[in-house]
Image (cartoon, rainbow, N blue to C red; front, side, top):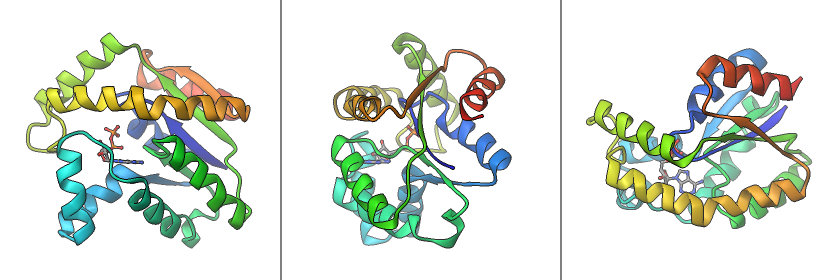
Length: 188
Ligand code: ADP
């Protein structure tokens, strides 16, 4: 089973991905985590990405696609994967389809965790307060920019998957257990 978990920053994608990988024995592919790893290792890619991430902007499609291309062919993806935080632009979605076509792999479903904007801003402000040291991009000004970027660059990706009849939505305003149950109902 190959899935895309879709939703704005603070929607709870990471939390839900964690539950799903354990239940279905598939792997989570988070481009955000991969980038943070590069930053930590101080690679050239990491150094370039850090400046962009700190502003809450998107890393270039080329960089992201080449990371995904290398990751998705690893043997641990054979049983299935969850893409978390990717694709984030229409171009990334198109490039992903080309990569998957060549590998003869399909995305089965795209699950959107839908959260209303006011609640989202409250959540991310809370996260900003809680994780001052954990993530450099978790302060509220930057998070607000990330929501602007989400609306402008990432929302069109939803339409793309809707047209392919792959889009399913869950109400992300419910609690973690309920959201998880709703997702599993869609998958089964
Ligand atoms: P969250 O899970 O909080 O929504 P991520 O951890 O997925 O955020 O991403 C953190 C940052 O990493 C983003 O703000 C962006 O700068 C960069 N990033 C992650 N994934 C992508 C992507 N697919 N395309 C471009 N930039 C990305």
